[in-house]
Image (cartoon, rainbow, N blue to C red; front, top):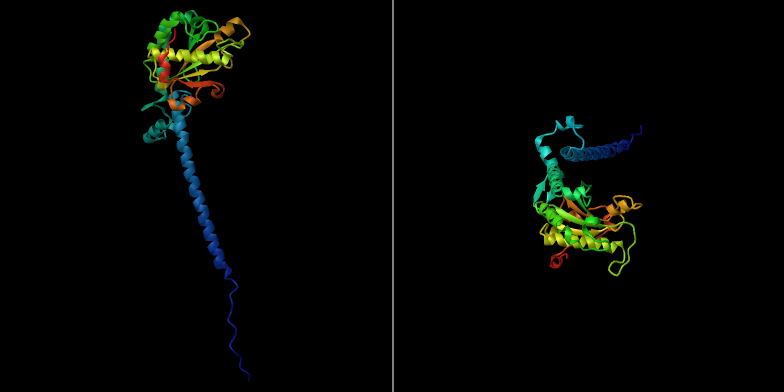
Length: 279
């Protein structure tokens, strides 16, 4: 009888399961890592949201609308949130509530100092979007077409300077005109006139020691930022003004401050400007 030879070795058809299992394990690990990253981002978003909410509450903008959620925060988280949203002034850190209090106090003091000028509508004091605005109307401070402050306005400027000298905030001096074109030997357009009035006023404030040069800037806006209509004589009179804007921010942010800053003509006042004073 013929004997059978040794049989062929059995080849498994399921070896692919090993590679498949390895692939599934790696895929699972990949999604676990993604899930962990998503949780970290969610925590960071929560911290940012808490910081913004705390800052708005300190300004009193939204009242107690989110008081329930704020109760769940720890004191350390609140401290970090407030510090993140505080306004830095040089080496000092001032909370938004303190800035608002300072500006409100300055507004009350100036209204008392300049009560006569306010009643005569030569000075207007109001809160603007950038800070406290002191508007010096042309009727009380400049002759028509001139950039030099009147001698009669010196007493008012001294009172303003005495108040400004008490604040650490920056100051931007803005020149504005109406829309009536001007073309003289001294000023080719309203741009030149508004810039010259801003610069001469800033120079006068330096002379009166109202502010230091590193906290002062001047800008000319011509007729492009009116506060009233240019269709009436009264409206044009209110548009012809120099605004002193008290800025509760650092000088590093000064270039970005003010309405439509790229359209204005900016000029930083230097120590050289103090050599010349207003007549």
